Image 1 (cartoon, rainbow, N blue to C red):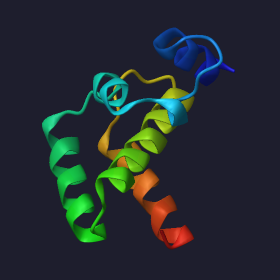
Image 2: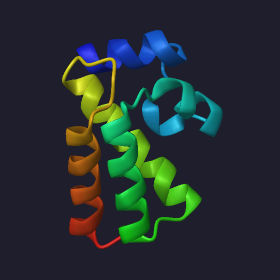
Image 3: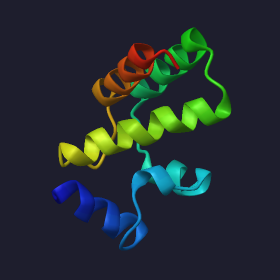
Length: 89
């Protein structure tokens, strides 16, 4: 429930990370330089489209919310990328 509360505080009641607009997503993601470089390499390796890139970030943001973190780290990005690879998308 804490993750829902974090999302509600950020986006408004009843909204989730999945419904974030691209501009909301950019303001909700706080990456350090290591995470930024990792994201670039993952996006290149997986040949992500703009939409795929945003979906990966939304999943990573949700994973960080579940952990009670304000920032998305390399760990959440790696986990989100792993989910994409597993489902073959």
